[in-house]
Image 1 (tube, rainbow, N blue to C red):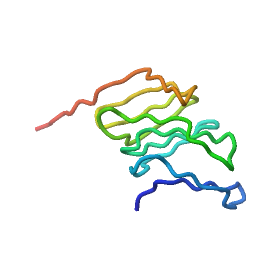
Image 2 (image 1 turned 90 degrees about the vertical axis):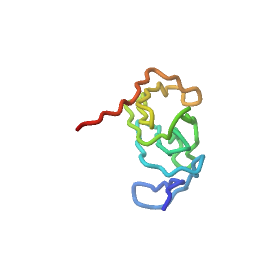
Image 3 (image 1 turned 30 degrees about the horizontal axis):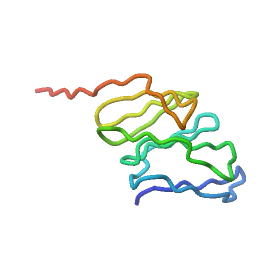
Image 4 (image 1 turned 180 degrees about the vertical axis):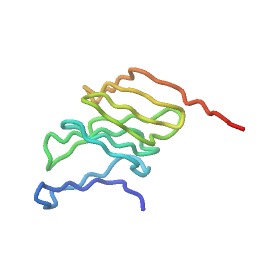
Length: 113
């Protein structure tokens, strides 16, 4: 089963709306920070949705990693931390339509005998 769209419910459990995400990748992690939702969506990259109007969530920003998929995401305030096949990338998402990369670190494979 591939999760490619989000369904939004009110606090009472009533269905409000849904939002299809970009790309064909499965969402592996979804986190909410303030009025933003951050989705790690494999080949769909990092997708940022505004939840300012819960009945009309809008796709505010997308980052497609140049090498590898977005497998995981964490967020604190407007900072987003994205795990890809090549490492960890940190973004300032205060303006989701124009993400700015703050830092990147390469993953290093270790082999033990």
